[in-house]
Image (cartoon, rainbow, N blue to C red; front, side):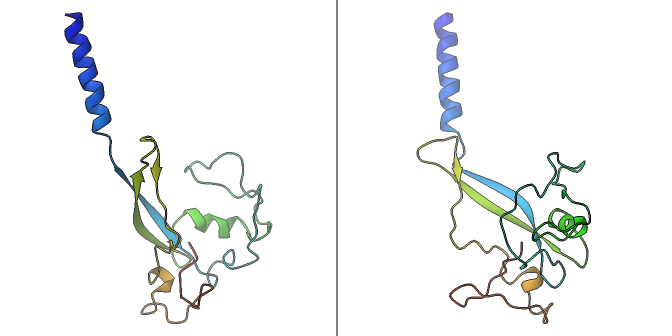
Length: 149
């Protein structure tokens, strides 16, 4: 009886490990921003420590540290709020997914690698059919991209 239980346990464990997913899909929201509507973008871009409070807000998103005072490239709590919340006329929420691939070296690690990650090129404020007057931003090679997300 013990041998039978041991064999069932071994078979079950092997089945679980064999059936692990080779890909993992993450679904999320990208909030497209533009400097003409949110001055935090394309302005004095610097690395900032201490720009958010230690605890997340009641809705589970970061909270700006400094109320209505500017802190480096963040102008105030209102401009920062639109980074993590849908704000009509200020940002455009776009649903996106990325697919992670299981690491060949460790089945507990999933990888996403993309050196040209511009997931909303031509979308949001970068959609020139809807937003003719929005500035076009170019990379170092002169290729237009939507950098503001």
